[in-house]
Length: 399
Image (tube, rainbow, N blue to C red; front, top):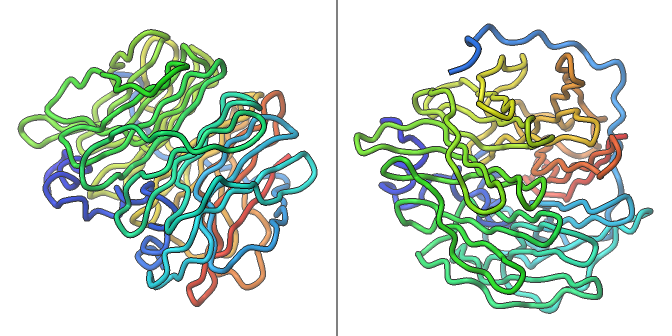
């Protein structure tokens, strides 16, 4: 299969790629679990320094209906965070489960009250403030976005779902910035990803520049209302493609050239400031991984840390950070382990950090890492797999 890789496979094979279906909701986690059991020159992999100490701690969840898994999280402050996913599903796909939302109040996680339930789950959550947050839900077995919830500081309410079109929703993204700006993107079977923006009053389709035949947006993150990134890949008319990065500067999206890697695609992005951002990705049909740095003017290809290897089919490697500028790479590697693995950058070097083993689990999958504003604390959510395989929601905290 030629490059264009991700997008070509998605369009031609009618959405059968698990890599595109992963973000279609926590329901798709069951299938993924079964499948999984021009800048500086490119140099050799950067040397990994062992971390002096590992301070990830598993934080208890309330009692949940088995099986259960978390797919996304949004951290507002030390006193408020949200985590969403699915509970009551069967790992063999016979039971789809129902939506799950948890709330952190500064001392413990508890169930959040939802305006209703359905067969399916919650795929994404994002927050602009303590009184403004969004969550997206998918229905089973169609894997279509069918529920949009809004938090107003007092409760979650169902709101109208934008018309995304298409027969499936994959690579679902939900991002929110301070001040209220928010975005939803999804692949719906069309040539390029569809993008919607919340302007404070309504959700509207939003255009973005696609310099080639097709563009796929795999991850969107927003630092402020005038500094956001959308990354993925493009495909040209010849079926070849490479990494794609779009920058939102307050009024429109602009393309920012990324040093070309044939068949490359970006799966995660994190902005520290307007002149400091990082993106991570992979190369289709290859074991290679990608790491880029934005210096405010251009993207530069960086050394990839030793230990950064491609994740199982259906997973997307991500990158996040804390308020001190430390970086975390997560959801990588295929080795089965009851310990979650992270790569942490302290500003000078990368360290491999693993948490403590969890009894009864044979594999840990990290879905999201998110920092607490003004601190070096970060949260991690995902799922721990037992040998059944069965899923158990997993939440841990560093710092």
